[in-house]
Image (cartoon, rainbow, N blue to C red; front, side):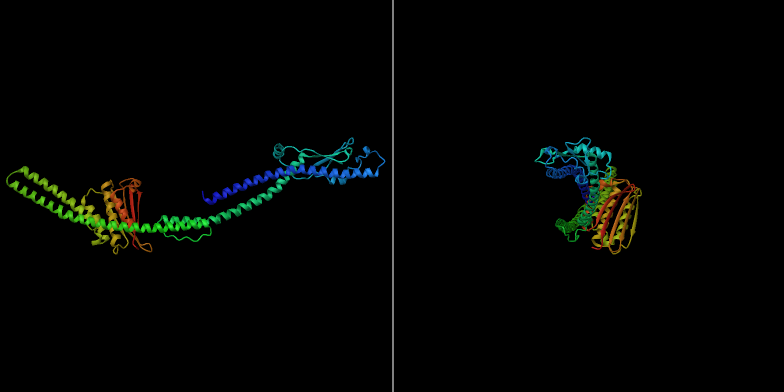
Length: 455
């Protein structure tokens, strides 16, 4: 999952949690606001009755104090204005048949759902009545009792939640959108860094990154640039060492070829001459047994000389230095075809202009084709082998060598093989700045090498 989506998802989760917490708090505050309204209503009505009590006391001083209760005159419109919606107030001791005086509770809000009306009182509890004395100095003046209406309290809480949720949802959506844009903008340079790393994985090590404003991203970009420079230097050093190693190895091969030709070749020729002499002498003396042994020695010597010639062909300078790449490839395929009629069919496909390809590129291409054909012929059971050499002109001037066979084989196992042949051509291709791939083909394997010619 992309980092931007992860951060946005976490942000949305935080917003939802905060929205839920705000909803719970709004429910609790709205529900308990009825308690505050009840206390305030009781206090206001008590203060109003206290003023009425002392006024009656002053105006009717001839009456007994216990009969100066402001019962007849307290149920007025002015008193109703002092009572909050959803709260009922009564005076005690109450007159017979007297009903509580309630604030306007109609139209407090939308009727809440049943589940809300059942859950809120269960978790938040019920409301308690509030009692206030009319006059702290005169206990006989009576008390004011304010009682909240539970249904009105739930309606007020639901209405408050609806009002708050609308604003909260808009704010949450705005925060999520703006924060998502900010996160996407902050992480936008990460795509540039990933692209640079992908180019480095393809061999383009010196990749220049733009300057980032963020200190952390700037540090990452600087580290990626330094890593690319070190990889480029290490690759150049490795290629130079590989080229030097190949040169040394080629010198050793040529020296070994000279030694084999001078020593083994001459000795084998001498052995063959001695065997012919013995065979001739034995024939004259009618020694058939000795003559037969001499012929067997001659046959073995011819076989050794043929093997020696084949080894010398592989050890000496490759043909591209003498004949050119195209002619040397034709000669290579013809030599394999002429060895045995039972061998698989070898198809040679040359495309593009190969006449001006020489030097290490031609040598590398010839060695790749030679090794791949050798492996396909000696280690496989292929019936058909295809050798394709193509020059891709243009800005990316490169030489493509592809050898395919239908002899089966496990591409993954062959690619991981540490054999000297594959290791050698892999080193040659790498030293030339190219690439080598071993993939499954139809019924067999496909070995492809790309050798740049621009360098």
